[in-house]
Image (cartoon, rainbow, N blue to C red; front, top):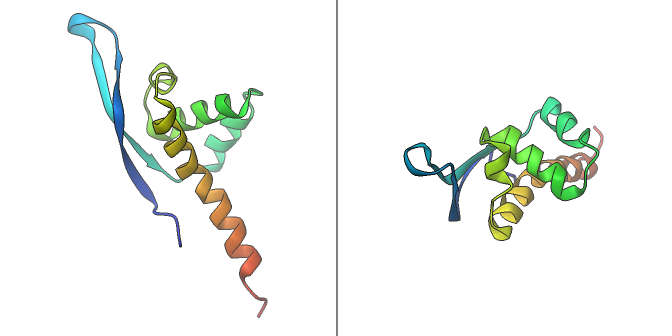
Length: 100
C-alpha cells in the first residue's frame, strides 16, 4: 500500500496558544512528504526521537513548534507514523523491485 502524498489530521484535542484576544486554536495538521532539507534539519537537532519528531512535524505542517509540543500523544504518534511511512515505503519499494 502506498503512502498518500498529503494527509490532514484532525486533532482529537485542539491545541491552544496565547490567551484572550490573541488566542489561536489549531484543530488540524496538514501533513505531506517531508523534503530532504526538512529531514536534515530535524535529525540535526541531536535530540531524542521525540524531539526529532516534534521538529519534523513543525517543519512539514508549518505550525509553531510550541503548538506541536502540546499535541496529545495519540495525535503526535499518528503524525509521526505518517511521516515515517515515507521512509519505510521507499525502502520497501526499492528492496522489492527486481532488476531489469
